[in-house]
Length: 600
Image (cartoon, rainbow, N blue to C red):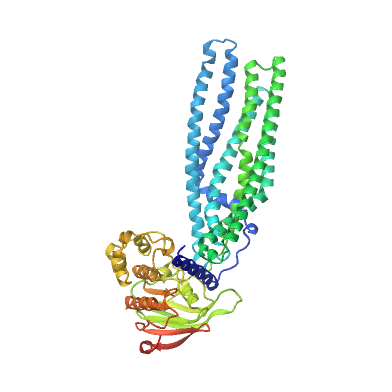
């Protein structure tokens, strides 16, 4: 990794740690101990809207298994009956049935796969959207209860468990029930004693064995999910902190931790596979015993003249084939244990309360022209019962004026930005924008009017054009050029071989620090919010570059209500007012003339 890459990685890590300290968030309960409805039942309720698509898939799966069993039973009856040399007309129906069942089995199997995967993928897509929507209100304030790798595992692997629940648990179980009931009923019609024996064998093999697997796999499933989340977090730490690990010679220790986590997952997988394999062997034993028992009963009945030879063959084949539908059940039980563990983890995410409560009846938020901001007596705490970070803060941003807010680290500058954008709640005081109280407005409306460059603003691994269009998807090429020109970025873009289609790399790795900050500024200007907030837009830049960027920012924001947070003293001559934040309150440090005459 280059020196620049190492600096970028170290800067991002510092931003993340600072953001976590800045933003309050309630402690999340252990997902395994989540109270309320059972997480698996909640997961099923999320999938219920797709039952109209799932039901045909389940019926097709059951039909396919029944067609396979009926095909073999009919073929056995036909062969036995043909050995008696009956008239062709008496077996013509069976001949047609064999052909129809053979074709039908293939068609139903294809239909099962098509409808089942279509329904499952639609259900998972809808559920993933639901989980993402529940995460959106949490993310701006940070998610300190979840490590990044763990959160990624919940959003990907745990949500995919909904697909496993449908395709590998519910549909195979429904097909097994249909085959078991039909086989038992058919055997009971042909020979009641055989029906009782077959039914009991199917019940024990199909209920008790999977239940035992589920019980044994429950703890393993939870442990394996936690281990996978740990491995994801370790992998993310390895990739993000590669430069620091290499610099301090700690790469080997980090890799060893990842290897141990991977070995633990492999051991858990082997244990689960062994449990499912032993259960499958038990089902095979039941299959053999039931087949022998049913055949013996059928032979006795045939010897007594109670059962004809074709029926004897059908009973033997039926007993053998009916257990084939039970073969997937041990694996389904193991998968169900994993699904339950995933459901518990997702419940912990879905039950996390948002840091800001939306108003029941939000008032319309003004969006026209520059807006003024009036902050009076503002008090914000990081945690309930903790000391206030902002205590009695008063600040006024007149419409169209540029106010610079300076202060030491930890003085609450970023917390003020978070409160303005409705990322964190304020305990008391008032924030009025355009005459509306901020807490009475919907958060989404607030952020459409108050936005800009936050402390942890992200540059996406895509083109320059796509990064800018994030702020305004309907922007024209002329709009993009105007925003880039105001941010003093246009000349650099035009000098690139691919120009606007240049891919910027992970978090802007292909850019210098100054170019990255100018890109973020261009994106904020393209959004054209009535109130622009800029949180430490020159962090990590050398003094000369920082001064140039600040000068360009204040020039580009002329006539726009702007709150600029910075540590710098130089480059602020374009500001209308500079204030300092100390002890959670604002201390005026000069008007525009004072800024012009102040030193660096």
